[in-house]
Amino acid sequence: DVKVTQSSRYLVKRTGEKVFLECVQDMDHENMFWYRQDPGLGLRLIYFSYDVKMKEKGDIPEGYSVSREKKERFSLILESASTNQTSMYLCASSLLGTGVYGYTFGSGTRLTVV
Amino acid sequence: GQQVMQIPQYQHVQEGEDFTTYCNSSTTLSNIQWYKQRPGGHPVFLIQLVKSGEVKKQKRLTFQFGEAKKNSSLHITATQTTDVGTYFCAGVNAGGTSYGKLTFGQGTILTVHP
Image (cartoon, rainbow over all chains, first blue to last red; front, side, top):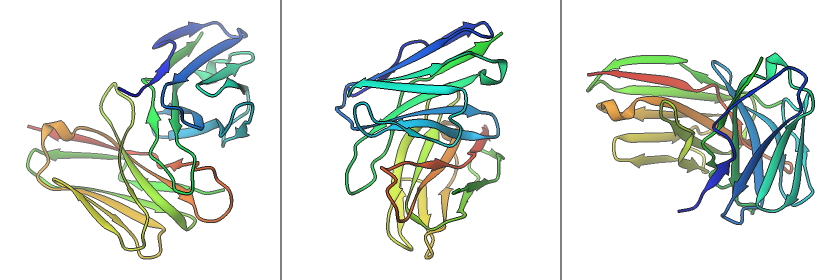
């Protein structure tokens, strides 16, 4: 069963901490994405990557960075966590090609910053 | 930037009633996708529409893509309690290099009363 795995389901961090959210996919997908989901706002794209070491800003990159050293792993980094970064974070992956392919999402990490 | 608006935000129906959610993009789309997120779950890919005026069916679900490729709808006939969840549309902007990057609507939360 193909899978996108996020390292933590729930996470509580203190303001100012550096936070790492990890995502691993086993489908050999080129594209990987990080979204945050907030009530009434849907899914908003933070960053995405279409290849190892490549990254592109999404719609709300401020306060975040990413790392993709290996094809299967895409990490989201909160350099200095703030309370307004409390949210559900969803990782997704998809194939890259001439068409557009459906995303496979991970189960999400609910991050609370106190 | 591209915006995808989805209405209604909430819909409460009695089991057996029909349900429709609408999606409108500020720009022409190359394709549109629909996802379902069960309560407590993550979004799951349902379908992709690519052609202008395309209509696809999955059992009780009917998906349409507008002639101008700027709007779409999802219609569920005779809702069941298993249809409960949030339905998202997501589109890729036509033209340019987007690497399959989707912009999601805010979602419609469907509640079905037995």
